[in-house]
Length: 141
Image 1 (tube, rainbow, N blue to C red):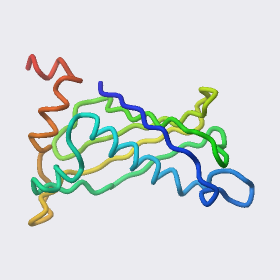
Image 2 (cartoon, rainbow, N blue to C red; image 1 turned 90 degrees about the vertical axis):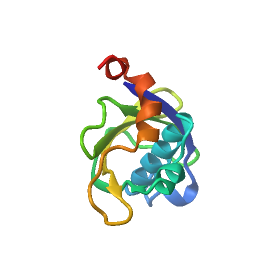
Image 3 (cartoon, rainbow, N blue to C red; image 1 turned 180 degrees about the vertical axis):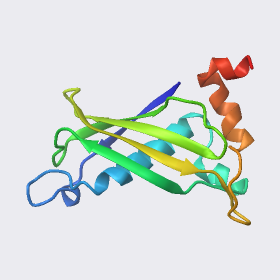
């Protein structure tokens, strides 16, 4: 299992009339956290794209448990619970406030596709190489 955490400060423009984070912003929070999680492996989305692989989002699931408010410092935890299979990678996200209360959970499914022809493809080797340390059972197989 791979886990990484990213801090995000809620901006005033991200809140709605009720003073809470507008639900649509969580997709952007998840995206920022995924990017930083991949960066923590020593690679970037740009590295993956420069190797001819794109990663479109094909599914987004979010469950809202508690609200976040303006100026809250959120901790977005990104988790890969399972080794990416075939052409798919699913990131799980948990959003916590500064008191450690779980506010939101979600998951995002992305596909690996070839940039040239948009065909589904396997996980790029540079990502697989970096993830193997987080999944010791893969190293032994």
